[in-house]
Image (cartoon, rainbow, N blue to C red; front, side):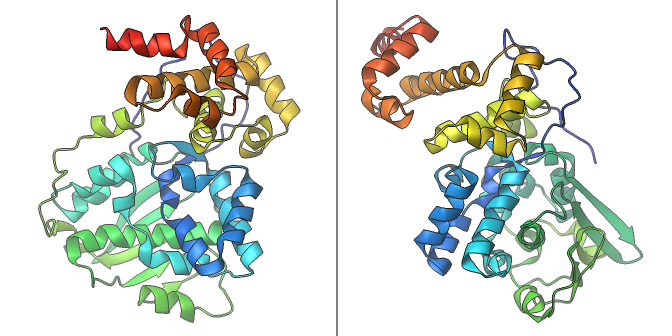
Length: 360
């Protein structure tokens, strides 16, 4: 698989030394688009609320935004729902509703390909625009094409639902070119065989194999040349459009970059804490703070303030949202406290910053 390098410019004033820290794999939060609503409808609002509280992130608030969260949060969120609902069929319930069309600019780029084979090649070569730590490949065995995924969180609790969802999204790509009624030869899942495979085959309407080395969808190799069934209005989208939509000054290839990405996700979801960040990074608060100070010369509070101020600048520049509302959303006790923090970081009060933009 070819990797696309995107937005890896260091944030001014911060440099990351080679600390040997494990960089957690991340995934676009759009992979969970629609899941919260489905959970609410199937299991009730209480189960959804408890699952969101358990992972300390309101995923529903940001599920349609182009941002990344650590992959461990995806599996933990799904596992919390399964555990609290006492139902292991969440992935099967969600499968019919999952689609590459929900994956933002990246999904649009993949589906804008002229043929099925090209769409799959686009997905593989640009996968780093959707997730890190995952691999996608296609192998040809005689007359069978096997489209395979190996996911970074394989084997973790909650992964069953990720595996099912991955197969469902691959199917959605195939059906965009082969028709809504298309069925593959078989689906292979890299999860343990359940007591009964019938619910899986009832969902996918094809044979399902378990204990496989990867999540795979197997089809006739001759289908790869099929053209798109309808001209896509987004056919002019390029990989540069995708990377611009996900622009991040640090990227997610470094430990610091993943921390910043998760802070940004929390800010956009309306809550921010060092405890949530430490959990998402798979570490303790003490270790997180020590790593930030030792390897980057910055502490969590400073980092969080920079991310919040940058988001505030975006809102002041690009929306008419009131300063009071911004202060409230960012967790400040009063607009005055927000204004002081903004002036300290930007040199202007929020109303002065907005007024300056209007006079340009």
